[in-house]
Amino acid sequence: MTVRDVMELIEAADITPETDKSREVSCGYTCDLLSWVMAHGAEGMAWVTVQTHMNVIAVASLMEMSAVIIPEGIEMEEPSVEKAKEEGITVLQSPLTAYEICARLAAKGLKGK
Image 1 (tube, rainbow, N blue to C red):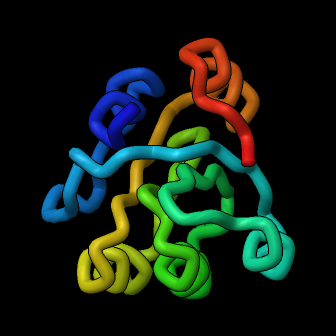
Image 2 (cartoon, helix red, strand yellow):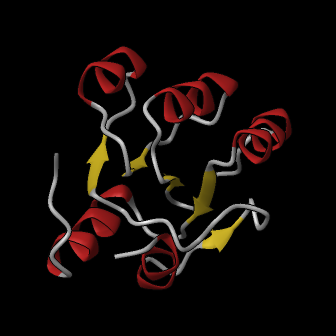
């Protein structure tokens, strides 16, 4: 599954259109505690979080994630969006809840870490 496939599946808006949507998504994860994500993240992961500050992008970049997904139409802070663009991290904004996003991803066969 690619980032583009994920975007369509979860009805997401692409708030970083400059980034590569052909990247493969290896697994999914949902967590809002950054230290936990740093300990359990993985390359190629699609990470669902309600956090929108700059450190989210730092963790996603460090772990070489394919995408950060912000649920419920929450808006990411502009400095974080700009940093995501610089780092090549795709940020998607979905109107769905984190639960609904994960259910759809799992139903299409994407595994958790």
